[in-house]
Image (tube, rainbow over all chains, first blue to last red; front, side):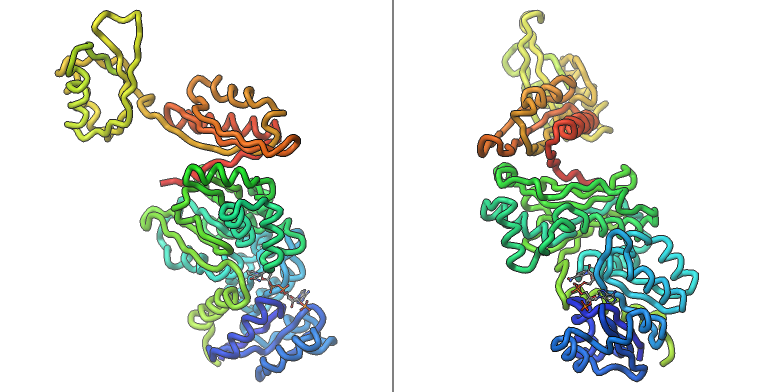
Amino acid sequence: MMRVAILGLGSVGRGVASMLAKKGLGITITGIADSKSGACDPAGLDVAAVLEKKAKTGLCGDPAVTARAVVEGGEYDVLVEVTPTDVKTAEPALTHIRTALSMGKHVVTSNKGPMALHFRDLTALAEEHGVQLRYEATVCGAIPIIQTLQHGLAGNTVHAIYGVMNGTCNYILTRMADEGLTYEQALAEARELGYAEADPTFDVKGIDAALKLVILANTVWNNGVTLKDVECTGIDLLTAEALTLAGRQNCTIRLIGEVVPEKGLLRVSPRILPKKHPLVVRDTLNAVTVVTDMAGAITEVGKGAGSVETASAVIGDLLFIKNCHVTGH
Amino acid sequence: MKIEVKDAPGQLVAALKPISDVGGNIMAVIHEWDPTLRPKTRIVQVVLDIPEERLDGLIAALKAAGVTILRLGEERLLLKRSVIMIGHLMHTDLSDTVSQIDRTGYAEVVEMHLTMPGIAQRSSALFTISATNRAHMDEAMKVLRAVAKKKDLLLVEPLEEVA
Ligand SMILES: NC(=O)c1ccc[n+]([C@@H]2O[C@H](COP(=O)([O-])OP(=O)(O)OC[C@H]3O[C@@H](n4cnc5c(N)ncnc54)[C@H](OP(=O)(O)O)[C@@H]3O)[C@@H](O)[C@H]2O)c1
């Protein structure tokens, strides 16, 4: 048995907890915390009871137990950090991840903040302590792009990465092209369906895609780029007419993240693509193309968000650690 | 490249035959009428796609066929790229935007579709730009980006992937 402590019991945390309980993967949850409470049991928590309590009361455990206490208590092999993204400070996730790594614990996170803002020092810290820091869920949800880059394409020289990395923008652009909606109409629809936040800035201005691009660039080239190195243009100024004009050329518009180190390119911007282009995916889907010397171009397409979809990426990381790095128990 | 042929029936065909013989792909044939030319001679610009290593063979074959090659260079490539610009296109002097590209000498706006939904609303336009080669196209894009930035227009470019 491998023991995990989970920080955050929102959409992703609940997906991870319920799938771990359901699928019998040899992983026990020994600690859990949300923003106001926490619970620990070295023998393994009753996940169903915790989830039910959370649904009923909004608390997953005892208000006297903090996330910090769960992290520092150390009754786990892997810390699963799935709390909200903070693009300015990356806190409190950053401190929790640093603490766990320094204690010699592996970390799996879905949180873009710490990985995009502090990639190099966190990976260095993990290495120093001989533990794994994995973050598959931070980029393109269920798509195993980090595994692809680190393992599947090992030995390749990566020339470029292009991708549709934000499902909210992709949904809006799909609807504008299909129905001739204005940006405002398509955004309102995305909100109604729960695809866009009340404050959509983070998505529509391309910041979310830029964070993912930074994580991908660091994964491949370890080049230390951060958010401020990304040239970023969002989709909020696009017009219905622009999509019609593109459509008449058998093309459409997508928000594309693009990193080509040989050309010094690190950019998120709306781009014109032929409708048949592999990156032209529909609705909230994500897609990413990697261009390498040996493999040529490889494109992966899949769901970029969702509770269980994101849990798939987190659990993949956990099993990678379990199979390759945790012995005994 | 530009080639010169005599204005006699069958001459053009004779001039083009060596191109297909060496596996070249003729993309466009443009006739130029130049009154200053010798009578019975005309200039034909041939845009073709041919592997670099076969070019010397082609030149020899054309010469043998009595065709004069006037100019040969990178300019044999005609590239087109469409971009979309969004913003207050009219208020920011659309004709100046276009002429900034045309003025480069190596690229020009060959097509434009403009939609204006209403007064004071942002308009959208699709520009098709033609340039003689890739480097010139990239330069034209740089010019356009600078113009867009200065005039506060949103420029939507096509995705150009590395091979
Ligand atoms: N949702 C997706 O599909 C998706 C996909 C990829 C990546 N991500 C990333 O995954 C992370 C989690 O996303 P989510 O959608 O699950 O968010 P969410 O639904 O908002 O849930 C966040 C959870 O974190 C808890 N939390 C907040 N501050 C905390 C703190 N200081 N200490 C401990 N717990 C704290 C919240 O507690 P309360 O319950 O008490 O409020 C909540 O349970 C984010 O970084 C997000 O960007 C999400």
